[in-house]
Amino acid sequence: MSALLGAQGPRCRTPAPSLGLMLSVVLLMGLARVVAWQQLHSPKAHAFVLEFLATFQLCCCTHELLVLSEQDPAHPTWPLTLIYFFSLVHGLTLVGTASNPCGVMMQMMLGGMSPEIGAVSLLAQLISALCSRYCIGALWSLGLTKYHVSERSFACRNPIHVDLPKAVIIETICSFIFHSALLHSQEIRTKLRIHLLAALITFLVYAGILLMVLMFSLFLPWLHNN
Image 1 (cartoon, rainbow, N blue to C red):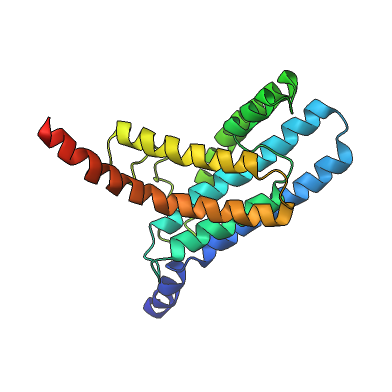
Image 2 (image 1 turned 135 degrees about the vertical axis):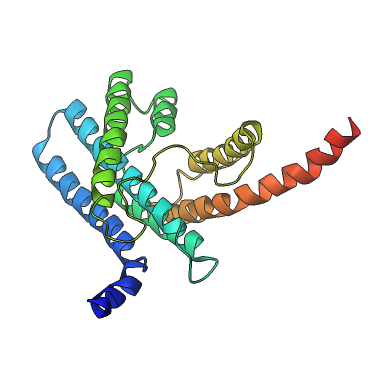
């Protein structure tokens, strides 16, 4: 029995189950999108289902990436590699969907989406985010690894360990850079554009920490002087 537990221990500490779970979600959502394209003809139903599937895929993978981030990486760049890879996967598989509320509102303001379709898309994203939370919680309860436990919390966390005003500033800067790049890259070939945006997301994740350090170095002396 002890030999069996010893054989299972290293396997349960590897990232393979989490990676397999995320790739399985991507494949299942891909199959569901194919069925939706073939069976749905109403524009509103089509928009609802596609946004639901896209948001479900993004939320499940994001929750699971949090689990992976808590494991001891074999190399310091491992988390950034995962972020780039799955940003690329999402970019390639979710073409034609906004996948987040900001994307929907941006399309509506630019006239690329009607208010009715926009409202349906936002509703689909909200319902899908809630569904993904319960679904991933059920998968964690299976105990695929020692990090998969049903008691895990979905509460918002503070991974960069700064107070709310600094976090808002960092998020605003990174979001502005990303959406500016999104708007100004419309004419670039789709496959190249997806690679560039995935690289930008990875860079912004890394740069968010650098921005935090820069803010401390710039504003801390000013606060002391005042």
